[in-house]
Image: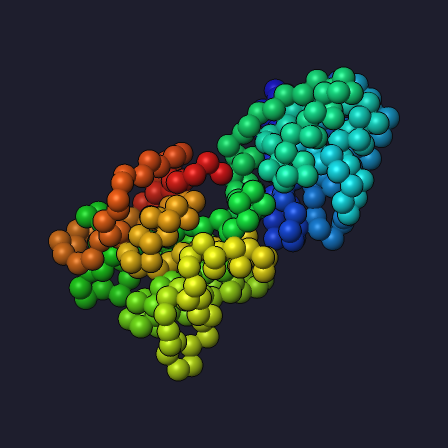
Amino acid sequence: MPDDAYFQRALELAERGRGKTGDHPLVGAVVVAGGEVVGEGWYEYDLVRHAEIAALEQAGARARGATLYVTLEPCSHHGRTPPCADAVVAAGIARAVVGARDPNPFVDGRGLARLRSAGVEVELLDDLAARRQNEAWRTWKRLGRPFVTYKAAVTLDSRVVVPGRRWLSGEESRRRVHALRAASDAVAVGMGTVRADAPRLDARGVGAVRQPRRLAFGHGPLPPGSELELRSGPLDGELRALAAEGVQALLLEGGPTLATAFLEAGLVDKLLLFVAPLLAGSGPHVLGPLAAPRELLHLRAEPSGEDVLLEAYLHEP
């Protein structure tokens, strides 16, 4: 089996921790000896053990001289557990294939340096899939603010409203939006959207284990009976405050005014556009005027029912 297949397996294992890791990242690990997988592990907050430790324990003595495939740089500091890098060295791993560096300032390259200093052959992939897997956590840890995704439903001529239609996007796209809400720590709109639509912003019909915090950016007051939290300070300050409260992933669903303000402040990390097969001909555009063009990274397109979902990044994940 080639390297990429073992590494893909590590990514799959990491996903088993989705929604369970708390303030830790998703991590998966595979130990291979003699062309055979001899150990596997992934991180779950409740288990405490890190992915590398679980895989090494399963491999036992066969870890000596083996190759470790791990999605994130092994930690090199004492936290809730001893350093994983030390455990990798002690187990006798000969080669480590690492998906991405850990942006945590307590790690960031130190784990790789520890392995190399002990004679372990280290290959750093800087893999996009590995970085995407922890995109929210990486931004939260590196920049001290949530990872912000701006989501909008638009027509082919970039309008966000079509007269006489409640929904622009189809049923499958709307279901995916509810899944996005369920996967986010907070969902936000601007006060213009609050006054016009009185949105609920909760996750419905997708078996959500928990509901996101629901926010309104702007100046109040909120309408009577609104269950949204009002955030009226400068955007950067509000995001840092939310990050300090544990919000790693923020889904922005506001209209053009709020989206443009976030973009101009450099605070949008990912763009998701559900493009409906419609031409509106008139009505508000998805964005207001920008001071300068924005280059989009890693553009992808995929069907979403009768719509097309466009995904792109404003910053490297």
